[in-house]
View 1 (tube, helix red, strand yellow):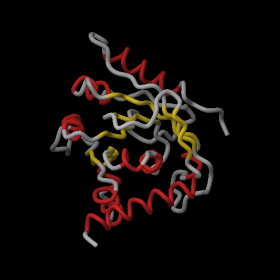
View 2 (cartoon, one colour):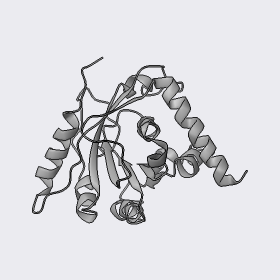
View 3 (cartoon, helix red, strand yellow):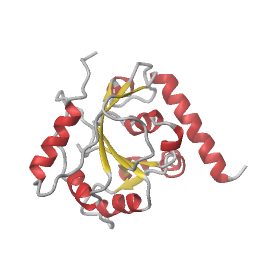
View 4 (tube, rainbow, N blue to C red):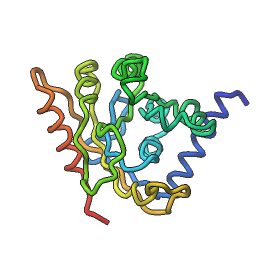
Length: 211
């Protein structure tokens, strides 16, 4: 078995584990699974969020979808780095402007230019507050302008914080629901504040009742 085949097999095992642990259930409310190039943007409550979203996609879409994650977390330790780079094919972003050597927007746009889809978290960091959603950073707006033909699909992840609370090493078995909304695009002439408010509202609209 080749290295690539081993990586893919481990990816399937990771998906099976994530779904078995959380009962992850995808609700395609505003769209359907399709081989359309997309930027899936979601709320961010735990380090397991992008694994759950990635695992909830059908296998053919998962093959062409790459999560965006913080290099500071996923490059710590050989196991995390292997999972991020080889199994998930994550796009690792240096979140510190003082140390980064690559433009994050161009990093993500390059992946889109090559035909893959992305999973992003516009809050920019995990939300550990009592607010349902933090204000969006500007990255989603600039990426939408840079790649205007790519659909933006909001995905609300319910219960992930309880599955992997801050500081936890072992996940807690709980049901997680991922709700996929209707695709969006930047409109001509739309300013940054209006775009970020519109996309944030579309994500909040998918929020389920508190459990």
